[in-house]
Length: 290
Image 1: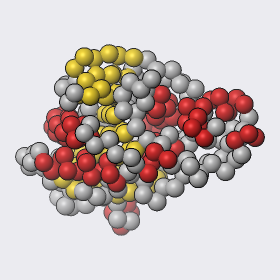
Image 2: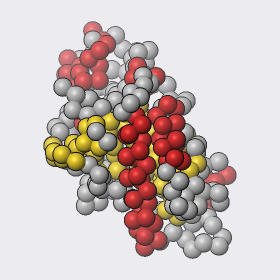
Image 3: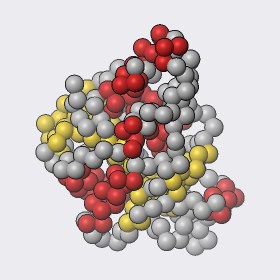
Image 4: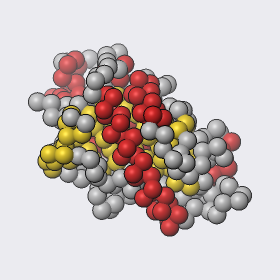
């Protein structure tokens, strides 16, 4: 039974949604282990939503340690069809200043030690990922952000997110390399979420919140933890306002996304030849094609 159609994943600095009402904290088991934290079900703008703290509410999980598959699978099991992901990032471009918001439309994956698919173990699927973000959800998110006229904040309606392994921040040489590639911001988490959400047929969009200029900037100091934490606190309030406004707009326009049928032509293995254990493990994702 669907408990929430809208999921929210809060990144660094966003460990809860203050505006949630009628809160219920639930632990969702998955075939991929437990999610990062308990999922908070609550009412926001008159609709039930599911909130998950990506690094857990005490920020005890490194980016590489995140149970990405469990997080997305748990959202799917609750009936989530749209995920709004908030993510703290460093800016790689002068025009994206700290505290600005970027609605991501592209990714470059620089991670090395992560599983980014539900498939394997006797079943092969290749999703299309040329446009990794749901454009309809991204538009709702961007429109919502712009409508708030947040002080000293520019909303950038597109940008490329470089996803690095972490947990160390970039060297100056790496930062300049990513700038030369056309990267807009750099973070450590969102590309795996985007890939898995697509496989789970969930529309996904990223709200990237700039905390610093990474270490490439000649005038600004190199990124420090203190600098990041100070801007995280300021970004958290903005993120909550944008997410609340997005939910308000989305609840009256539950559109059908191409993401909702992403597996239609992606599964190459005949389903009657998939090992029973794998079929059972992925039943939630495969059920409408079985």
